[in-house]
Length: 89
Image (tube, rainbow, N blue to C red; front, side):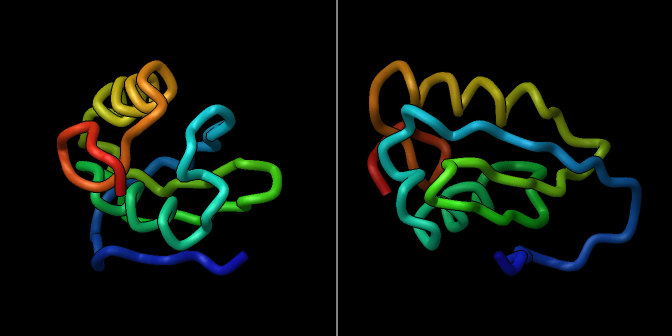
């Protein structure tokens, strides 16, 4: 699994392990990475589509709760993807 970066960042970060089970697009690595990289604060993402786990490098100054709430919404409605809405990728 190689990491994919959105942009260069200079400042504190945090590493977050995320369970993507029950998220429909999590089985496609490229789609999942693209969706995660579009979320506010996400700087890097790596996804294992078999285990449906992700490792995200997040800007320590950004709200992790936004990412969490979006993932909950994806699970609840069986959708989610890129952008700020809950539309399919």
